[in-house]
Image (cartoon, rainbow, N blue to C red; front, side, top):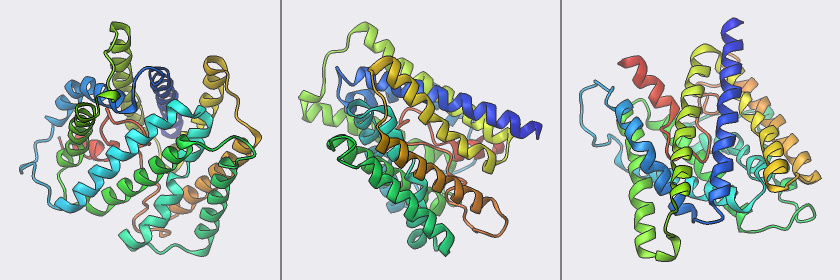
Length: 319
């Protein structure tokens, strides 16, 4: 129990840090495009993450064993990050988080064709309840739908596809390959967008440059806290702590952006969180799932400057 307590505390700290990360993204979003924010946050994240990648002593090359799956996963990851940053800018934080919380539900569905998962009636009912919750969050009667809601849905969907692909090819690919390709793609593709579409680039003020560095620093700190949480505690205990972000979203939204979640967001988020918790609890039981795609998904949408946590944990154990 002591280990689980430590795991819970580290996880709560991690998602408090991640929420602070998202606040900085939202603040910078009023002056810079999501492409520019992703580009600079990844740029500042490279030094430390490169040192971490150098710890991989496993022999091999940087050529993927499954190049097409790696390409698909990289494109899904890049799209998810850009869409998430845009959603943070234009939506209240609570609205964005509520939609992102649907990612485990989508992972459950996607794991059927890609992983050969067998989803029984109980989990299908949980997915259905969660998707009803998403519909409630998107209820035009609660708040006017805009491109930000679509961006959040795209981020959740692409994040789910990326996570399931990791589960599919993770045993065959080197950890360093799994970690490096999405970061490089984020950097080069975001830079290419700004070159081809100059309207997506604004000159950066010195103080704002510190903001980009802060995003990178907070994402890496959050990542390290999540690693500490999963190292200390059981996954079934640690995983649900991600939902604490809705508390921070409400607090930061009210104090910094004069935002309060509507009743539709509160009700919808409640259904999404309840269904997500149910799926996690079902997967934590022995024999319920051979792959456990939700329970083993440790990354969250919208942290392009930090590496995926699962491969990094395996890299640390092998070094």
